[in-house]
Image (cartoon, rainbow, N blue to C red):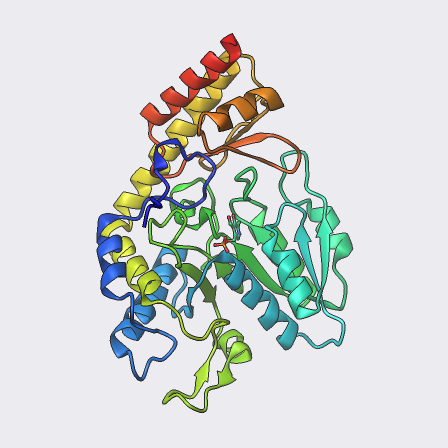
Length: 352
Ligand code: PLP
């Protein structure tokens, strides 16, 4: 085989990162184990239960329900599916800020649910009044995002949870990317003190686990019961996951990464990411670029299309938001040296 895996030294656009070495080893060891068939593969199934417990500790949820999904898309889809099936209506809708990840339109399409996307405020966070206005008696779920894909913003989670509770709807928090930062960031909520019913938190993003390791968490067992189907040919009675056969690599990799990094390693990742994000913003501003203040380790700034294209041609992996800002995600593999090289390339492009 001639193909080589992506070299991460110029990757600034990804929400995934280089796995922790322990996670890489564990993934290779459990590659052929199938957590979808616990009676045949009990060891990886036990590891999965432990990962759910660890994710509960990170999000402050006692007795967590959930599983290791293929990624944030599956976890979000399953949250919508459970809400649809638990809601007491024939025409359920889901209310989400327009900053929500495109997995929600996908989920709505697959599940036949109406998705009501509502505007965000000036700081690109869910606009509470708009959410309130969109909710009605057919609302099955309200979505809040804790770490938006494009700008890294965190919605007003407790207040959104109250809107959901008043409407008798489930409240889902998509912390697929932000989840491993939140315990160290300046937010005063988690499962323990906000009315959150379900959450997406992906070990294969900020958690430094290998792909595929998404995380789906639920406060209440009824959510998993709503998702479970009978599994006649397996020795276990039901399966709540969307996929059937799954790779043990994600489960074992997530277990190893979290064991190695929670909490101190994740704290260091978060703090280094934030320092890098703030430093990059100040460097960009000193060059007269408009850069948005980061709330999590993600920088968005205005870059003329010609400069964007020239940097891409030099193999810098950067991407743009729907409104055209360039994004730099300060993942654990993104070092100060990388950002210094990136700025040197930018200066070179500007010099013509
Ligand atoms: N939710 C958020 C906030 C994301 O940023 C992403 C992906 O970046 C997803 C969900 C989807 O995750 P995945 O690509 O692992 O399915």
